[in-house]
Image 1 (cartoon, helix red, strand yellow):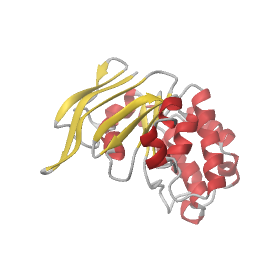
Image 2 (tube, helix red, strand yellow):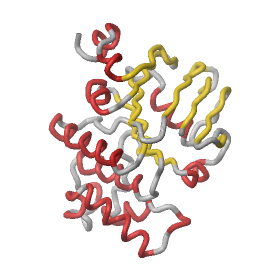
Image 3 (cartoon, one colour):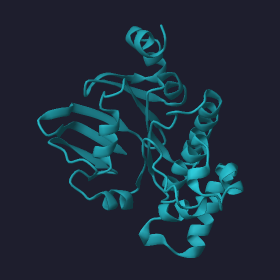
Image 4 (cartoon, helix red, strand yellow):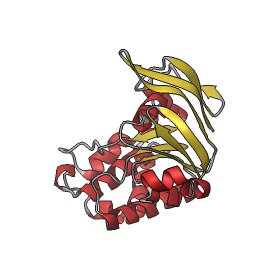
Length: 235
């Protein structure tokens, strides 16, 4: 589904990604793990068209996506739930979800159907549909960010640090929802510092360090790799 081949991304004179390659097959949950600054978020920004490549290429469903505008990438079927949630704090839950509906399918009936699907997945959002986003808890805002991304009916969902700043019990609930989303037919590329949670739901994973992929394997093998155990799973 998604093929990332030897990409390089630079911030001025600093190279953030060095020859990074990975793939995501249809139906999978694939995770990128690593410390802060390893290049995980930069990888998602590159896929979404938010950062240009200095080298390498990316294809989605067999078509090249590097060099395309972010809105074209969304249209192709990739949605991005960003780090830090980035909800529109002065808008209600319902208004945030409406913004997530892509411009080429803004018929009211279609949007209403998708919104009800999001509410079925996250009943807490349904209870707070008229509440302003700023007044919600961190966990509720994260649900809203994921729900907003789902409003575009993505084939591939990019999730950037969904557990950031959340209590452990909320993280567990959220990851249960991530599995549910995948079972509904949405392929997921998950970026997470919480390696234990990420590896518990993914089928395959890639470990990034200093902008390079240093390990790539099934999650079961990654969980048992000495480097991963010592550095990311508490020994």
